[in-house]
Image (cartoon, rainbow, N blue to C red; front, side, top):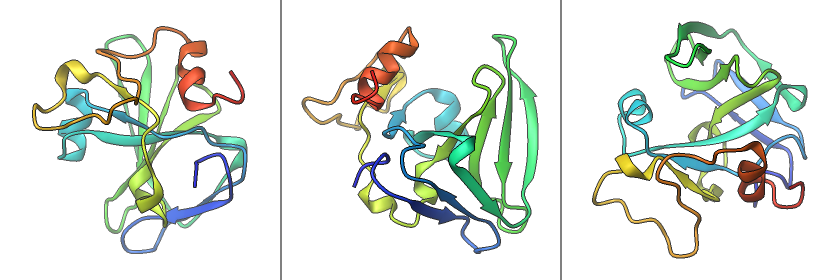
Length: 154
């Protein structure tokens, strides 16, 4: 199943926060291997999905914290206040779009990254599958992102 194909529910570990992605409002997932994602997630990468807020609904209370970034943007991270699972983030650079943590989807076992970014800092033991686009840093333009994450819209 692709991120684009169907309604997809998800939520935190304790179930206090639930969300739903409407069909057609999400792009394909990607894996980010930057040091920030490694540190924040405690793993080799973060698998994420860009989702338009217009097609995203949430039930339950959330807790958020904002932080300025070196590029002048502000990133707001959203967690469940009970179990502290990070669910999504929002960047001032992408109004109307959230960056969902793909592991919080109920069917996260179906998530396969359509591309890998920041591979300059990926862990040496991580192997990127043949044929999957990989960037040393990240795509330079919105068109390049869409070519990999929404090929039918690019």
